[in-house]
Length: 176
Image (tube, rainbow, N blue to C red; front, side, top):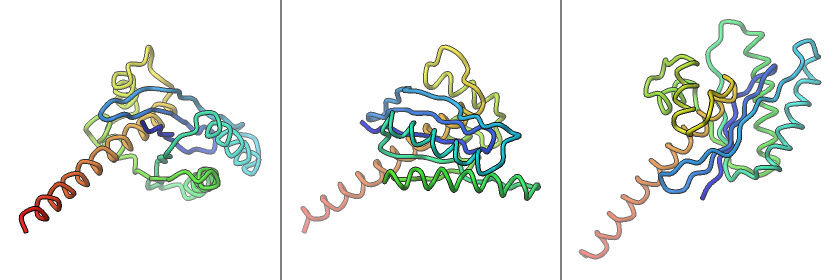
């Protein structure tokens, strides 16, 4: 069983979602949003993200961390602030020695909805359905759960390829 922490970075709202994967089964554990005061100075917001994410990692002890990657932005100032938040998130996971994988928003949407340009509402609906949640999670938390779902599917695909290669190599060894 593998526990995955998915993270949707933001300086005002950082979503997180925790799922467990066993074989092809996906089980919901938790989700939430780290909110910071929009009027607070950036260093204080980054400190809050770091501290709360550290508590989340300590509480849920994920085996792996998946983070949504930067998207293209026309507003350079917003992209720079988001980059700061991502840096704090990556550092926090690295300090806990957690393997980190990054996914683009299009990869996450494709994994969850089947369409890389899906709307936030479509992602929220599918996350609710895939994890059998009683209600639709907040957008930032749904995105983070989507990142965790995307990572679980990616892990499954990689393991299938590795297994096929191992079987192929084993079969070749027997025929020599």
